[in-house]
Amino acid sequence: MAEREREYAAGLTEAQARAQSQSGRVVKLNSNENPLGCSPAARIAMAHATMQAHRYPPAVAQELNVALAQRLGVAEECVVTTAGSVQLIELLLGLTCAGGRGEALSFAPCFPAFAHRAKIMGVEHRQVPLGSDFGMDLGALGQAVDERTRLVYVANPDNPTGRIVSRAELLDFARSLPKDTLLLVDEAYLDFADDPQAVSVLGVLDQVPHLGIIRTFSKAYGLAGARVGYGVLPVAIARELRTMQLPFAVSGPSIAGALAALTDEDFRRQSAELAREGRKYLQQELTRLGCEIVEGQGPFVMFRPQREAGKVFESLLKQGVAVRPLDYAGLPEWLRVSTGTQEDNEEFVKALGVALRE
Ligand SMILES: Cc1ncc(COP(=O)(O)O)c(C=O)c1O
Image (cartoon, rainbow, N blue to C red; front, side, top):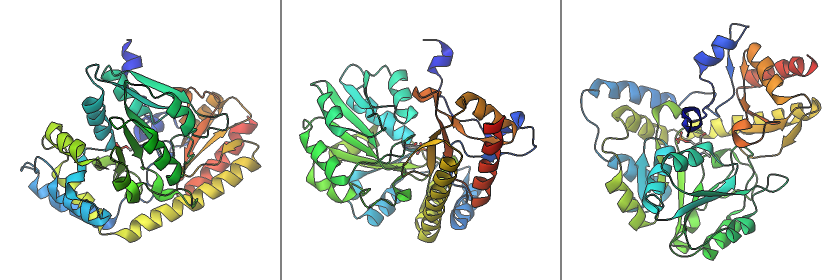
């Protein structure tokens, strides 16, 4: 595999975007980050925790596991905390599929980190295309399951489309799977959904033994840089992952930040509200500017401009607005813009107007 193909296709960093901006500023709307930053309580807790930077954190972030278990109303043994949810994805691929034990299944496109980790770990990963309207057809996914399938990954809402499936559909789907096939539902963006169909499977985990969820502090809690994710998983799997996981994986400041973030529900609510309003505004404005949009539920909007997407991306970047090209997902005509503050969103719309006229 060529080195480039093996690299993870991340969005441009702020410094990379700045180097290409001709306007001296960057409106960073390419990685679905929280435009409000993080909770002040989390920031203070992380700053305090750096005083203990010379000490190892606990090998397993048990205090955070306990706090999450209490918050979610689940048994502590079901909770696993990792350095970002991508690490949990890697651990799960390792446990269920690596070494030729089985294969992974997801939609195409899916969250690129899932496909990337499978590729790098040499795990066979089959993908079922999304429907023509980018809908997630769980029936089609189910038909692709075979006796080697050990892990099925569904992000709800999905990335980059923002499409959702209902809890009832997920529950039926989980029940249809063989008992040794784990259905992993990634709820990274569920906080931002306002469709009543978008409901967590947390409340039904006890109904199916091979169903689990992963979540992250990177989005609604605004702690993407701190790298904290967690899973609520079948006990036997959670136990195994806690044993397998890299000792000290979640740093002391990150544990402190996540614990403090959990105490600031207002911040999470405010972040979700801002993203929902931003999404509505961006959907309206993109439509007004003649772009095709996917009506999703994430803190982002996927859109197809009438002009070549690559050219629009370049023009936006020169104007200081970074969005995400979706060629990595096999969608070269599409772009994805994250919701920002209202001011960010307006800057984007203004720059897009220019990009479309050039
Ligand atoms: C579907 C999905 N899951 C999870 C994440 C977050 O991953 P992490 O917790 O590693 O930051 C993202 C981030 O973009 C995502 O799009």
